[in-house]
Image 1 (cartoon, rainbow, N blue to C red):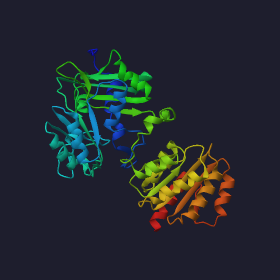
Image 2: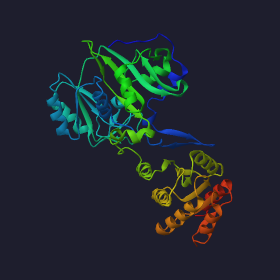
Image 3: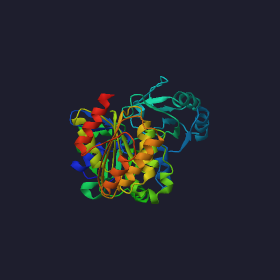
Image 4: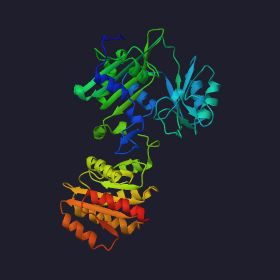
Length: 409
C-alpha cells in the first residue's frame, strides 16, 4: 500500500476532529451557571477493539491474527493456537490509554507482549475479573471481562489514520499523521502541523466506512512491518445511531456492560437519560428544555440529579417507565416535570404521571409544570387525582418549588 499525503498544516476542522476522536469513550462536562457537573454522554454504539477489527477483517482490511478469551485458560489455549513468535495480550474495555493503565490486581498495563504462551495465561488471570483504570475511565476503573490474544508483529513505521464525519466539509474527511501510536492526542495538541488531511482514499477502509454507516473509522497505529506489509494494529469505529434500522447485525454487537444501567434501561423505552450529580430529577420533553430546566434549578440553588427527555410522540407507558427510572436513583429527593406540549399531548403525560404515582407509591415531592396541547384536560386530571402533586405556573416557579420542597424535608 502506498501512502499519499500533502505536506500542509492541519485545518481547524481536522484539529477539532482529532481532539474529538475518543469522545464516545470519555466522560463529558456540562457547564452550569455556577459549577461544572459531570455527566454521562448520550449512549452511542461503542464496540470493543476486537469487534471493530472483525468488521475490518470482513472487509478485506489487514489486521493481526487474533482470538478472544473470557478466561485465563481460554487465553492460554488461544496463545498456543496462534503459533506466533510473539504474542500481544490486550484487555478489552471501551476506553483508551489501556497500555498505561493499572489493574486493581496490581498488574500494570492493559497491553502486554510476550514470546512465552504460558505467560499469557498468567497475565490474563490478573486482568479478567479485575478493574482497569486509565485516563479515560472512571476513577474506580472498568472491570475487564474479555481479552484479545493476537499475533505481535514488528513495526518499522507507525502512522495515524482516520476517516470521520466533518460538519465543515459536509461529509467524511480523512485525517492522517506520520506520527502514530498511543499519544496521538498529545501530537495533535503539541504539533498540529503533523496532522494532515489525506489526499487519496484508502479504499477498503473507506468502503467499510460507507458500508456500516460509520461516523468514524480510526486506526492508531496504522503500521508497516519490516517486510512492507501494512497492518491495522488498533481499531476504533463509531456509528450513526440513526442507521440502526439498516445495520441490525452491527448494532446486535452492542455490549452495554460498561454503560450506566439507568441509561441503558432508558434506551429500551426510547427515552434519553443523562445522569448528573444533584438531587432534583428533571423530566422534560426536548434537549433544549432539559438544559434550560437544569440551568434554572441551579440558578435557584438546587442541583439537577439528571435529565430525562421524553422526546416527541410519547405514550403513557413511557411516562410510567420514566418515573420508574427516576425513582430508582437513590440521589433523587424531588422530581420536577417540565412539559411544553407541541407534538406531546399533555393529557397523556398527566395520565402517565397519576398512574406512576399510584403504582410506584411515590415518596419524593413532585412538582409539575405543563403547558401546550390539551393542557386544561391535563390539569383537570392532576387536580382530581387526589395525589400530592404541586402544580407550577411556569418554569421559574417550578424550579423554586422543587428546591423549596427539598429544603422542607
